[in-house]
Each structure stands twice: as C-alpha cells, then as structure tokens.
Amino acid sequence: MSDARPHTVRLELTDEPGELLNALRPIAENGGNLLSIYHERGNLTPRGRIPVEVDLECLPERFSGIVEALKAEGITVIQAGEEQYAEEVSVVLVGPLIETDLSDTLRWFEECANLSVLDLSLSAPEDDRPSARLRLAAHAGGVSDALARVRELADEKGLLVIEPQLDRETAA
Amino acid sequence: MKLAIVGVGAVGRSVLDLAREYGHSVTAIADSESAAVDSAGLDPERVIARKDDEGRVGSRVPEEALKSEYDVLIEATPTTLGDAEPGFSHVTRALERDRHVVLANKGPIAERYGEIRRAERASAGEIRFEATVGGAIPAISTIEDFGPEHITAARGVLNGTANFILTRMAAEGLDYDHVLAEAQDLGVAEANPSFDVQGTDAALKCVIMANVLSGGEREFTLADAEVEGIEDVPGSALSLASEDGRTVRLIGEATRDGVRVGPRLIPENGTLAVSGTRNIVQFETTHAGRLNISGRGAGGPETATAVLSDVGRLE
Image 1 (tube, rainbow over the protein chains, first blue to last red):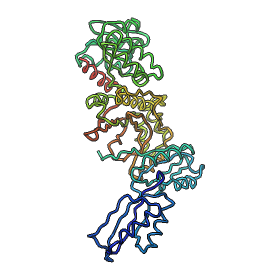
Image 2: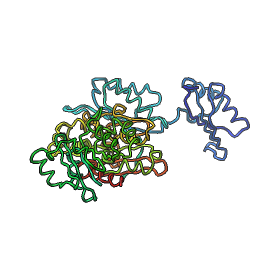
Image 3: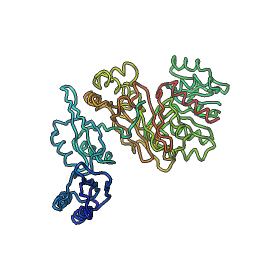
Image 4: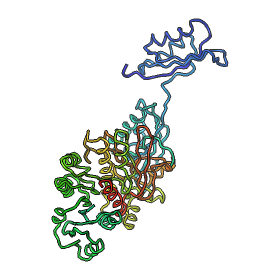
C-alpha cells in the first residue's frame, strides 16, 4: 500500500444493532484499510444519530468507490475527503515567472498530490525582476517535501526560491 | 602569555592593541613582508605607527616571528579557500613546535578541519577558533559548553554586509545595486563584495559549526555546502514578503547532516530578523529549547575580543 493515502470519513449512523458493522464492511470490501474508528456513542447529532469518524487509507483511485459503496448501503456520509491540509507555508519565487508561463507554474502545483496553492501574489515592476509569493498548503509533516518540489520547479525554470526558515519561532 | 600575531589587518591590529588589557604581551608580529620581534613585549603604538608610515611592522622577515619564542600563535591572515594557505602552514608549524594556536582566519578550519585536528592530536598545543564564527558572539564555545551532542542545529545571520543590504532594501524600498553602493560608501561592503553577498563567508562559518557539531564523525568543507547568495533578491521579493508580515534574511544553517545558506523568509519581528550589520546565532538544543545569541559579528575590536577570550581559555 505504498501509494495509499490517509482519508477521513465522517458518517452518521442510526442507533441500531449492527449499524457500525454495516458501515465498515463497504470500506474493507472496496480496498480500504481501516486505521481508526471514533464512535461517539454519547454524542448524538441534532437528527438523533451517532457521529462516527473513520480514518482509513486506500489508493487514491479507490476512495470514491468506497464513498459510493457506503451511500449504496444507505449510510449517511457527512464528509469525505483526503486528510485536511494541515500546514501552510509561504515561498517567494524570483525570476522569469512570466516568460516561463505563470499558468504553467500553477498547473505544475495542481499536479502535485500533496500540495495545493492557496493564493499567489505577483509583483512585476518594470525596472526589476518579478517575484511571486505563493501560499501553499501541505499535509501534516509534508512541508519539507513540498519545499523540495518547489526547488525542483525552480531548477527547471531557472527561478530563485526564497524558502521560509522552517522552524517556527517566537517573537523576540 | 606571550602572543605572536600573523596578519596585521583590523583583527591583528586590535589584538596587538588590546592584549595588554587582558594580561598578555605580544612578543612578535608579522605581515606578509615584514616582522617585529621583542621577547620583552612590543610597543603596540610604535608597531602600528611604523606599519602606517612605512607599510612594514618592523625590519625583520616574517619567518623570524614564526620561529620566535611565544606561547600562542594568533593566526589573523586573510581567509583563503582550497588549500587555505598560508594560514594552514602557520597553524601546523606552530603545532609541530607544541605551541597553541588561536585562529581568526576561517580558511584552515573550514577547508582542512580533519588535518588540523590530526596535527593538534600529535601536539602538546591546542587550537581554538571562536573568532572565526560571528565575531564577538561565543558560538563555538557555546557548542563546546553544551556538548555537540546536545545541539541539533545552529543557524543564524552570520554576515553583516548581506544583512545590512537586505535590511536597507526592505526599509527603504531600494534596489540591490543602490543599497550595495551605499554600503560600499559607508565601508560596510568591500569594493569586491562577492565573498559576502554570494554567501561564501556565511557558508564558511556554518561549515566550521558543522565540523564542531559532528565532532569529527564527518568532515565538511565549503564544497559540501549548498549556498545561494542575495545578489538576485529584488526589491519586489522584499515587498511581497513584507505584505505577509515577513522579511528576507541570508540565513545559514549547520547540522550534523550538512550546511545550507540562502535567502529565507522569516517573520518580520522574529528573533532572526536582526537589523543592519548585527549577527545572531540560534541553537536548537536537545533539552533546553532554543538559545539565541546576537551581537556584533565583525570588526577589529569585536573579533579581537573573541581571540583574546580564546587565549584566556588556554591559560
């Protein structure tokens, strides 16, 4: 399962015997590997159901099949998605951003599985080299990988990367 | 202690000037062409006056200073890369005579650390090099005091020229060339600033810290460092950083795994964002969190202070 990715699914179950098992079977049967189940029995939703949070991992292409199978079983799926992006990081890129096609650069980021561009600010004064500040979101613990990808892109396009100094620091 | 100084730049002159205050006497001094030797102790003012008037410190040849009777050799010749000569030979020859050596010259420690340490092991003399990193900031002795195994990383702003340029660019919205010219007028940057603005100087300091951190398990030289300078940082990058509450500084980082130097985004009001020519060294410790030491990272009296502290540690 080296390409498997963690996902979190939030379900709402009716308080009936066997309901939890009914919810887990479609996951296992569709290529999901259960990591943890958080069954909040004492905590009912406004609709009187029991919220359950399931962490699982599966190959990216299997995930939608798992969600479909849950729905087919009549299970209410509240939220399904890849693990939330947990860390934000800003970088500044300097150099021929426009000549090397800015939209191509953005597309490149979109194709990175563990990385997403939250926003981009461009400064391109007439008399100086242009810079772009990108705010990136990465998975928990994925910031150094994200920066490695940024360096890769910068090498390819002849850009200078101004990386963030990684360790968070407190104000003096 | 009797000190012999090689190198009569800002650091060598300041050591000559301040040695007496620290209870030492300078019995020999040499520049590349000449030397003065007096076992009873040289008169600093006379030596400096002669150097300024005639371009020579005395009527002897440098070799006589190197062969004279002294306790500690102060190696303050300009930093050279690669074979790190003539500094390297000055150090090894002193160690062969079982003398101590205190270096302000980064070359031998950054480029030939292993050889220097081997020569030290075969000698009754010791080497010390606090002055090679961060001027008056006690970076090396802090690593030694904590023990290298209790420090996981050392990073910081280690070049005052680059820091001055980035600070001015951010504060005034000026471009690199403009601020560089200003820094040259003020004497903050040299006529050829490449050693500072290309990150080489900061990288050498980090290489030295990486060598001390690894405790000889792995030897680092400048060639092992990943170095990016500040010449290509435009004003637009600084203004984008500032919109986000950040600024750009040339940050060097040393760990047991290697050395990286480059322009980095840091919080505008954060600890590492020192202004002007100020330096800062930040240590990550295993049990005591983060330790920051900032201060003057260059200059004759500042660096001489570190040299003379090292001499004190040898007593």
